[in-house]
Amino acid sequence: QVQVVESGGGLVQPGGSLRLSCTASGSSTSIYAMGWYRQAPGKQRELVARISRGGTTNYADSVKGRFTISRDGATNTVYLQMNSLKPEDTAVYYCNRVILQAPIWPWGQGTQVTVSS
Image (tube, rainbow, N blue to C red):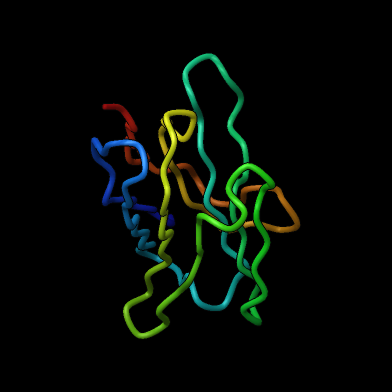
């Protein structure tokens, strides 16, 4: 069974930055397309960033130009660099293997990101 672990969240002021990390025990994050999702209170979970097997990246319009998804095959880690954070970025962030935009693995517990002054 694949177990996903996200980390790196926290409380940050508007305009600040955070880098989230995701590892997956029992599988590889480097041979599949991977995505970062977020779920804000009272809202549906949404895909905000995706990286294909070949390294092509795609972003939701709401984060384009501010977030960057990347991976390190040597450490089996997927990252989400988040810059110029806004209060509306506040959410629990999750990563998962994706096929198109559909999550495949069991969800991890996520990591809370709170953007507030």
